[in-house]
Length: 274
Ligand SMILES: NC(=O)c1ccc[n+]([C@@H]2O[C@H](COP(=O)([O-])OP(=O)(O)OC[C@H]3O[C@@H](n4cnc5c(N)ncnc54)[C@H](OP(=O)(O)O)[C@@H]3O)[C@@H](O)[C@H]2O)c1
Picture 1 (cartoon, rainbow, N blue to C red):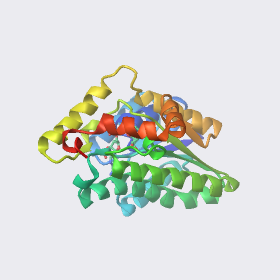
Picture 2 (cartoon, rainbow, N blue to C red):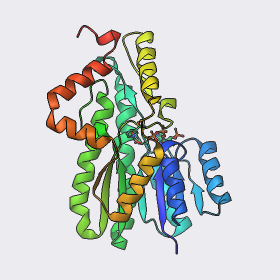
Picture 3 (cartoon, rainbow, N blue to C red):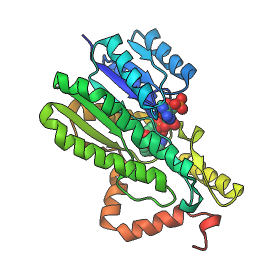
């Protein structure tokens, strides 16, 4: 029987590319995200290409919805072999401008969303003595990035979660892997949150990122999907995607210089005199 992958955040961006790549390699795909129509469109496109795929609309922030997702997935395909935790949101601004709701948006999605799926699926993996958990983190999970405090907090937590699980679960036959991309030209700007002292500061922050995303060497969702595939195939614990290697190495070698460059790059009118 074909193996099965469950992917969160599978309706767009990195998750969608990963769904198509795994399907092309013979996996049946369980797709999860909130927007029902978009998710169904991806599932239908996969089925039209003769791949097995089901869409299960889920908000990963809600543990009950995630429990139902896992139950429905196992009912449909009997077993899950790979979990790709990917659903996430981007949030940027000076730390003093974030509301507690902003912090919750980032941490409930980017961290609790991953914990909910792992918690719901782990008994299945443990009872089978096999399974792979891929956590899509970020360079921001290894390098502290100013003006991204809630995002960076969530992604550093994913790094710790991934490394602890890897150590604990590998003797049980469960492989755990962290994926660390740099900036990726995906669909994340659609749901990205920007904060600033004034409306124009928020707009300036958004515009700055849109301009950076136009630079030709910014990597694509396919690059991350390929890295996820390689990590699962080769049971790698930790993959820095492409240019992320340079960012992480530069931070390790020249931490103060890199912090200064990040501050200068991402500061805005509202933080200019700090
Ligand atoms: N793009 C980058 O520059 C970049 C860099 C490094 C790491 N990453 C990480 O890569 C992952 C994917 O990012 P992406 O760039 O592909 O983002 P994207 O294009 O915005 O796609 C995000 C996906 O997650 C889903 N999602 C968001 N909130 C959700 C929730 N509460 N419950 C269920 N699904 C949810 C979205 O669908 P719905 O809105 O319909 O739910 C969508 O399918 C994220 O973890 C992100 O932090 C991205």
